[in-house]
Image (cartoon, rainbow, N blue to C red; front, side):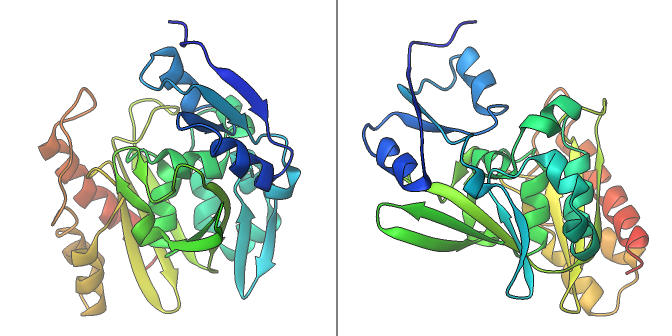
Length: 270
């Protein structure tokens, strides 16, 4: 299908982008375009104005910051995979980025676009949740920091205000892994599991097990109490509400969550 008619503006800076977003109520940010453009073609999304941030190199970086790693929102998935600092200090995020879509998607899609889209089947939001990441947004009132645990609010719904631009993601140094089940390599995860060990604690995140990425708190509590990985993994689906769709039933997803959590914990040598 063909999208409805829209206007197009190129932001010359983050501040200019914020200004353009505030100029009308139906404006949307365009970054890599891999999330928004398909929805526009299906006419699920009908923005009257696209604000293109894709040329803002100031939002494209990976660097050390306050003992952790700061990532510009326009950093592409491919760059996350290849970045030496990220591979050394937070390999779970670099690995997860390598599993996103196919090479074309990874060379154009951005971490900020993936996160701001708020898709519960997306890989990187789950990893950021497991890492206790912080997300920095800029808007008309300046900059604010949003914990990952408060950022994802529902299906395609986040804590970003309509006039805000996601500028930076901050993650701690951490070990861990991300595993997922999908029918084809480029498909969304039927279920995904992120395990991150940071500051002596083990965090577990779940993909496609509810309307947002979820923390498997029952698993984390069991591990903290001394449970073995296979025992803790049996509680992976506690408190979840997985959907039933063409990729699998809710019961199938519950089973997958238990299996994948066990594999991820064993891989991380928890």
